[in-house]
Amino acid sequence: MTFKHLKKVSVGLLSLVLLAAAAHAQAPLPRQRPHIAPATNITVDGNEAMFATMCALYASGFESDVSTDNWSAFRAQMRDRLRKQQGPAVDAVRQFYRQHESRDTAEMLSRYVWFGIVSGPAPKFQPVLRRDELPPDMLTLEGFSEILSAYYTEQNIGQLWRQVQPIYNQEIERLHDPISQIVLVANTYLRELNNPGQLRTFSIIVEPLVGRITNVRNFGDHYAIILSGSEDIPTDVVRHAFLHFLLDPLPLMYPHIIAVKRPIYEIAAKAPRLPADLRDDFPSWFGECTVRAVELKLKRMSPSEREVALNTNDADGYVMVRPIFKGLSDYEKNEPSMRNYFPEMVRNMDVKAEVARASALTFARETTPEQSAQLASENLNRRRRSASTTLPDDPGTIAQLTDGERFIADHNPRAAEAAFKNVLAKYPDQIRAWYGLGLVALLDHDGPRAKEVFGRLTTGEHAATQDPMVLAWSHVYLARVLDEEGQLEKSKSEYQAALAVQGAPARAQQAAQKELGDLNLRKSAERP
Image (cartoon, rainbow, N blue to C red; front, top):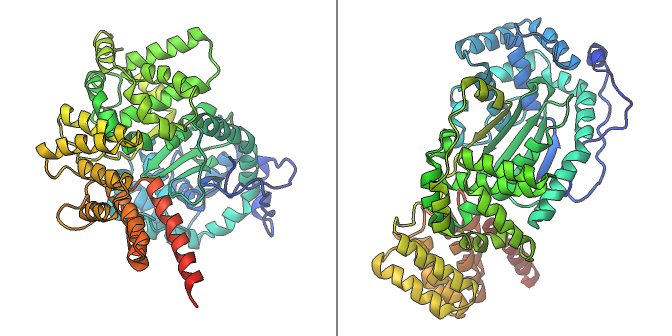
């Protein structure tokens, strides 16, 4: 895979110490866009909002007492230049900075990094998310958009951004090959093909002013990693972040599959070194274990090194890494992509054996403050995404739902119907069971029954509003049935409703988008 908007320039080596000369240039060097491959939803680029935010920070005195001995020349010179700025808007920025200053420099930087990521374009810098979607860190910076906008205009930050492009282009060009290799290897192993039309995005933002700390962020379906450049590329961190981008959706797509493994998690959650945000977030913990297991497959390690890594994961509370790593050996012998093989891999894990193994482990002691500070070179922030709350806390019922889904996959509608009806006998409004009956109707080619079930799940008091996966796919399947009946306008409305479901799986929205496009083309062709 390659990258969208990957910028390259044909320039010689540009010494960073010549920043002053570059700042007075009449125009920036052109940014050529080579046609390496079709565009994808993976980008490597600079970000003007991030640049403007960091300029405002340095103008306000951020890290003014920090030695620049280990800084790049560009970053050091920019700090000196920005500290000398004067004007009413600069004064307003400095006042805002003082009012929101924190003793924890890393925490304060984190807030502004979040601001740069979710801000819209200059000169207004309004967030691209609704207020209820914003990361909590950003809520402490309310009102900063207007202040940054005034600063941006007063100090001609847009012109400065254009003038420093050669420096950013060099860093982007330098990142191209190693990051392309990371993406290629991960996609090849997981048998993934990124769809440029899908809503999920992975952005690598090059920003030398952020410094050497590698910042990894994700908000909803959007992942971002900020690299400072001018140093060795942190390939392990980039690969880890990209694997999260590829693998995080899987536990959320199959919550009733992983739910059976929850007893293992209840033991692992007691591990002192497990991050606090993973101790009450089962899907994220399962996703982290999956990422770590795949990493061990992709890294070049000797058997002894790999065993040490597996032991470390066990000691730190990531006890599912070992069984997932074992399951990947069977995955490698099969043909489906990880997205399709994941349920089978999870089902094949022996819960009783893993509970016994986890219970016998001695977890590592909690890290000291000094160790924690050392580990903070990667600042990973998760915007937690809750799994569906529509599943009952009933192992027997979850097992029946799992059996029903397996029977659907095996094209055995009668066995699947029996499993789902057993669930409904105990829980008459259970959404996943009703959804399963809708899939049974599709297997039976029973359009009226499918229309009835998916209609129940998309409108009225029984609508699956708390389960985005069921709601989105129910709209898609209902649209298909309506299309078969010749009700094209109603079908179109259902596809549009699927696209509007918040938190819907990317595959459901891709299907809705594609079929809506096909429907519009067909309607256009049918017009006299």
